[in-house]
Amino acid sequence: MAAFARRFEGVLESLLSGEAVEGEIIRPARLVAAMRHGALDGGKRLRPFLLMESARLFGEPGDALMRVGTALECIHCYSLIHDDLPAMDDDDMRRGRPTVHKAFDEATAILAGDGLLTLAFDIIADPATALPDPIRVALVLELARASGLGGMAGGQALDLEAERDAPDEAGIIRLQAMKTGALLRFAARGGAIAMGASPDAVARLTRYGEITGLAFQIADDLLDLTADAATMGKATGKDAARGKGTLVSLHGPDWARARLAQLEAEAAATLAPFGAKAARLNALAAFIGSRPS
Ligand code: GRG
Image (cartoon, rainbow, N blue to C red):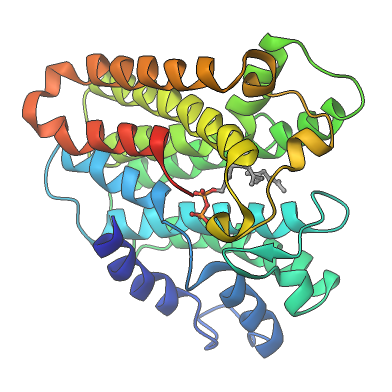
């Protein structure tokens, strides 16, 4: 994953260039700098890695897949920039550095998020993402649905509401499936769709994405409770401080660790028909459940 992250950085860096492309007028230097601050030099690049590894089950993923992964990471980075704003989670540190609104200012951070969100769809729609047109259109739609009203943005809205009226367990699972699960689901499903996989294979990868999304969130809630800020590169203990309900606060850390082991086994069973080719995706599911940060 670390080797992938280094290779990925170069592709993302070139797409966040300060040079205007056809159809643009200029790219304002301060906005480019804020977008680069929020997107480059940090992050595990988990979602694009998952997309590439899902694609690899069906053949060698090329540059087009790398560009789809870049689009996905742009959405993820936008969500972090906006989530850190004072009106949302109000964080000063992210990935061990000042958040975008601290390094620049709030208005610029809002626009940097807007710029990254829009750039994601620019990247996939661009013919340079050399995939058949129906596949590119399908990916645009899938990514929009994962990111928007009934996906990540909707999940964030439910998360804000949850601070007032505490949801029950089913409500917590649903809001997390939207807020953090939807992009991971897209990563696993999108890799299969981009490679023209069969409906059965797409369904299996979708399920795998849902399982890893759930595992990612349980691990994140566990880390919020147990890890220190230096390891995480951001403040921790925030859920408990706000009295925010999570599966970990409902059932406790021992339950969470047992559930993570269960989900790892479920992920492996879902991918069993792919045999040894799924070894890296199985390792990834294990990593997601036990990641240190
Ligand atoms: C503002 C529309 C909008 C949405 C925000 C995803 C999200 C919704 C907020 C992020 C809040 C948060 C920290 C959630 C926990 C899960 C999460 C997304 C953690 C960070 O993802 P990693 O671990 O981060 O992949 P890196 O830094 O490695 O990219």
